[in-house]
Image (cartoon, rainbow, N blue to C red; front, side):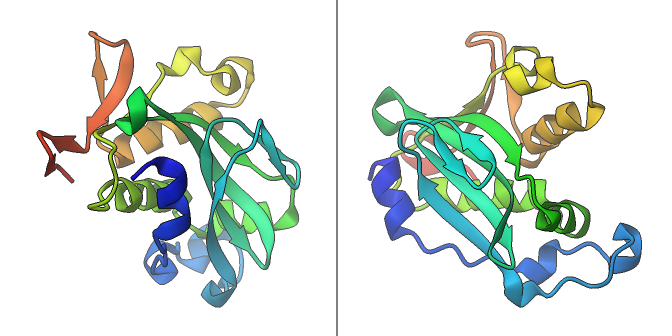
Length: 180
């Protein structure tokens, strides 16, 4: 099943409680997990969700109290066998800080990608990401946090750098066998 069909068909209901950081660690009062939502969406020629421009074919966004928080976008390549992570974006919203400070959001996004990609109807065999020095957000940003966000996502997905393709890669399936 192609990415766009999969996005519409697969239900994602994370156990948000397991991704919460302790409120004393975040410096904020406890987050109401019933107000958290994982949004899956198809991108149409660069899509703006609130103040966030996404590129690619599909995206995931963690929302809090119906406001965009933080998300990522990815594109489908090689006739559906490869998904390439395009960007990690944060919305310009007061709720964004709540998500960033209170939720282990990189792990949540990585786990959601694993859930989607390991679905038996998915055709994806690998997830890839450009070298960090080739990602425009990383190059243009003056914040170490941006680099950390991408590096942590690489770690959460157990990606390895491939000299052959000059990208980070994680194999989902080898010869139709699930790897995750």
